[in-house]
Image (tube, rainbow, N blue to C red):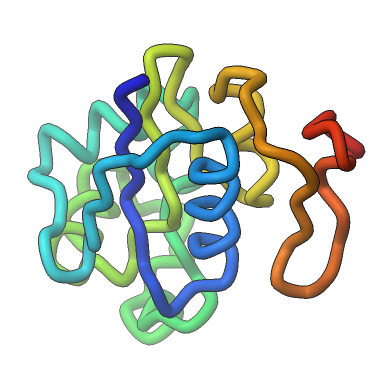
Length: 140
């Protein structure tokens, strides 16, 4: 299965998502989006395919969101996209693309909705939360 993850290795949610993909026996294409950000067209497609608004796809925590005044409800989606393209840390993560769909995997177990049921045993997040049982079946 062809899977792509827009990944930030410094993000626990992104690391957990990548680990769940690998637990399904899939080695995805990993795009470290801070080093190789998506184009505007790619970002628009990711957001649309995930069924989100631009505002739902922007990251607030740990970013210059507030300092840039991006919390202004009068800003258009195009203006928010401009900010995300200029400063990719504003792109929420991780976005995952599979033949079964595109998701912003927040929380990380959302990725299970677009992966085949091929998990290799149990899986727990970095914080110890159990997501899959010994048979690879979803617990949450």
